[in-house]
Length: 154
Image 1 (cartoon, rainbow, N blue to C red):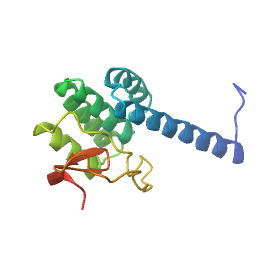
Image 2: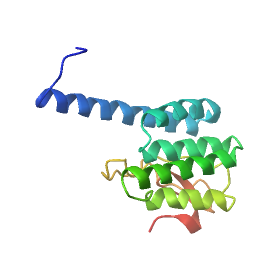
Image 3: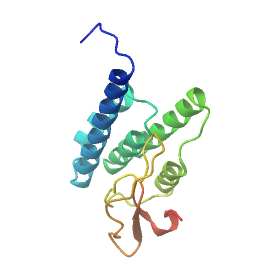
């Protein structure tokens, strides 16, 4: 169907399917991070974020991948690029959830904690995390990742 313009229902369906595909890719990268595949997840997330620079979940997952690979500066740079892009294009700041992740990384957040499914997407719809079980007594799963208790969402 290249070269053919869709309108109405067809265009809406294509947009819906593209969003579902991107969400599934985010879920797969999240699972790969949970299994410890940080370097390979980082590579794919870099590519996806280049194609979709406004996707906060992609940026958060990439930050986690870089951070857990020991590339803390790259993780913080990823946040700075997203913040700049969102301000320039949409006139908004990153979500409070992503801001908490950034703050936790800046203050020496542990690298070995497990990720949890994002509780929100770039479209603003709310999803319930699959697991809210803490990985240790010092962490609580919420949002982008299991965060130190001091950074949990209220």
